[in-house]
Amino acid sequence: MDQVAQSKQTNVSGAGRAAMGRRNYALGLVAALLVIAMFAALRAMAPIAIPVVIAVFVALAVLPMDRAVAERLPKPLSWLGRAFVMVFLLSILATFIVGLSYCVTQIATQLPDVSERLSNVLLERASSGQGNTDVWTAALTQLRNMLDDQGAALADMAFNWASGVAQGVASSTGALLAGLFLVLFLVLLALSEADNWAAKLDNILTDRDRPWRQVTTRLGQALRRFLATRAVMGLITAVAYTLWFLPFDLDLLLVWGILTFLMNFIPNLGSIVSGVLPSIYAFLTLDPGTALLLAAGLVLIEQVIGNWLDPRVQGNSVAVSPLVILVAVLFWGWFWGIAGAFLATPITLAIMIFCNYVRALRPLALLLSNQRRAADLDDALSG
Image (cartoon, rainbow, N blue to C red; front, side):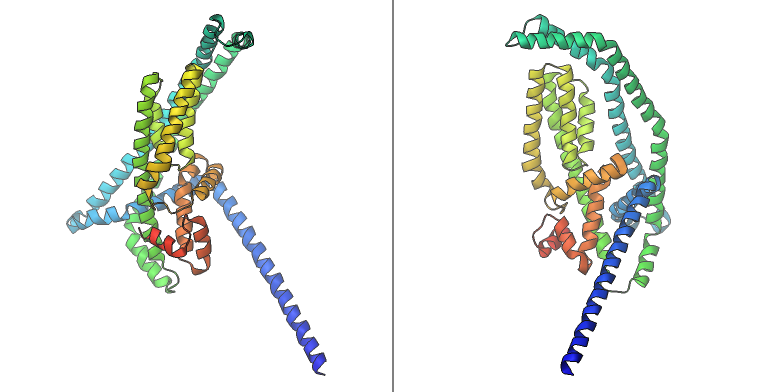
């Protein structure tokens, strides 16, 4: 009888474990489907989701400034503090958009001249007999003849492409301005209702395991440190690049400087882009030896700034793993385009900080960070 009862109990416990396993599998499948549906919705709603995400990050970053200015003014004039913050934000965002549009337009308008200038360089080298062998000279001559045959078509294609890009930038100015004002309007509403939302969340979230105030405070601090660090490093890198370009008489100095500064807000990948573009332009407009020397100097500057100066200035302002940041930039750049590339690091920061304050998700936060222990991550996020 005891053996029969034990056998029945074993069968019941086995059936229970099987049922629990099926339930966990079903819950995991539902969670995966929900995540896929959420990302599909975010991609479909990009025109709305991107301004909302930007507005949330900007509001968290400037909230202390808004309160500090308002506290120093008489209560009837406290609205002037918010007006000051909005003018400050408008100036920064407008400068950013205008600078990026200027760089794209200037590069596009220079493309029609590239094939002609390259053809002339090849003609000079082939006619002067430069090169170590006749094979090299013959190759240059053949390439020159090919450019002569297809030069008009290439020039027309380049001109049409450049005109299309310039027209696209001009036509998108209205959309950019509309998005800019939408972001500013959302930020204004968020700052105006910050105290009301704080009171609501205090009443709703009574569980001590949901420290939302710590999450928003840490995220705001991390965003401010990240933006300040990237601005400083972008300025240093832009000045270094521009000074290096001067002896080579490279065109579009202002464009490369602005582009380098803006691209530094995309960690890792941005510095590569800002170095590759002028190197390619130099190769197409200058002789190959000069272009290689210019590119080698850029690599040296990037190594010094990226491996020595940047870590010392940045410190733990961005406690996210560089590998995670690179993957995030690639993913969000594919997901939301250039806006996603710029938002990749703030989004990853937000995910890491949120996970760090949810007990069950702290291992994920540690995996996303550049720290080895949870205590070290807490210290890094506390500044």
